[in-house]
Amino acid sequence: MGDTAPPPDALPTNAVRIVGVRKSFGTGTHRTEILHGIDLDVNCGELMLLVGPSGSGKTTLLCVLAGLMDADAGSVALFGEELERLSSEAKTELRSRLIGFVFQQHNLLPTLTALENVAVPLLIRGTPVKAAMRRAAEWLDRVGLTKRMEAFPSDLSGGEQQRVAVARALVAEARLLVCDEPTASLDGEIGAQVMTVLRDVALTPDRGIVVVTHDSRFFHFGDRMARMLDGRIVSVEAVEKQS
Image 1 (cartoon, rainbow, N blue to C red):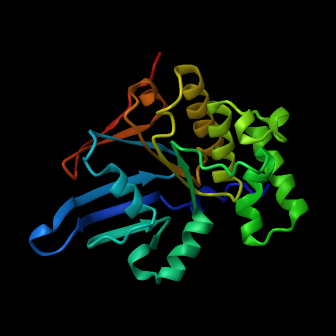
Image 2: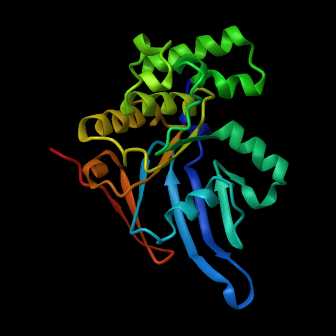
Image 3: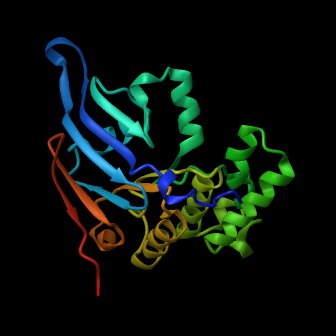
């Protein structure tokens, strides 16, 4: 499947490095600064939780670190590649090559089966259909959905749909997984299944995960937690594991 990790000495230390990032919206007297000089590192091989109250800037920061928005100041590097040095076309290519997205709303295509939904990123890249379907099947097997490959989204539970979304995010060998409230609409058991998949499938020495969440039920799945308040990182701490 092509996910063999490179030798340890070839791996970057950081999946994400953010230094002094500022972001504002509006103009003139209506200009509002959302991010106030953010510094944050996400290490390779860790799941970083990004938590804080609504309006604290979490989703904006997620968009900036994923290259969906440009920062007004500061720098963002993904696996050593500095986004501010890239053209719009190069950033689009980098997102396609490095980043997988998982959202609270699964965004599955309703007329496609689970297998076809997972294969979509590969087909967009030009992967031959048979190869794309084979790799999609392998990832669905890894997230425990071997028997649900031919099901349509409307026939899947919420947890199954989210696991399809995780497989879709990872099928193209995404090295950075960016998740915005992936468990918010799920019950405890299904949410734990999704978080377990994120840890077991994606946490390898050449990958990193950033999860924006309000859901304290699943904080123990993280390695570190960055707390945001009013557009600033106010603390970064190791997560206490459950015994």
